[in-house]
Image (cartoon, rainbow, N blue to C red; front, side):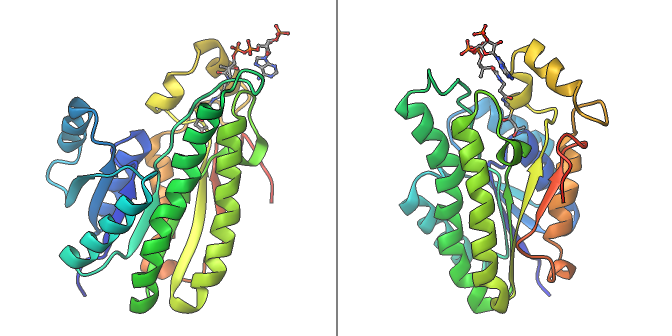
Length: 246
Ligand code: CAA
């Protein structure tokens, strides 16, 4: 069988790089997408995945037409798009009283709109080929809500509703759809938080530390395996015990 083709949006970010690496090491052919803006970041990514079957394509996931064209291109060039990991995400942390409409809309458009924009064109081919694995990278803050993140928490919680609905639509076609909800990990996003706020959060994590991106990638690799066909509509929290529920 030919290699499964995987697309990872937000692929050159902290979690994204680890996810691309894990999927490539598991025998997938990986295409990372991200904004085109930062040449140094892209060069850094290319160094990190050197020697692995990982390519890069610029894509703004908030652009509906660009996502549809991208999926068509991937299917034409590679014959399929088997695995889709929606990892693209941004924060605009600010209390609700100070949040402007733009800060709300940007986060909704990228974090939630991006999932719609990628999944809608991807589900067509996955259904026709009878195989698909979709993993939406949500957040513990979509489950608990977070001070200063009304926009981000709403988008990340919305991803769970989307995941469950799409899981039902894909189930008879061999397409599984799950979310992974990371806790606080050692990524640029988290390291950019005020240190006092971060230290305060880490002190509440039962395992007593930030997560490593590779620990999130492990969950994604698990859910995207061919053998994971009976797991769908689920959310896999990877948060060091910060939010424990069933
Ligand atoms: N809970 C309750 N009250 C809080 C609070 C909290 N967590 N944090 C601040 N406050 C209070 C302050 O004590 C202060 O009270 P007073 O007005 O009575 O003095 C008030 O709220 C401060 O309000 P401000 O609007 O002035 O807030 P600020 O400018 O100081 O900071 C913030 C706001 C930037 C949002 C800051 O709280 C913050 O950075 N919070 C963390 C947000 C966060 O967790 N982001 C995660 C980023 S990483 C990520 O998102 C990845 C992932 O998925 C896990």
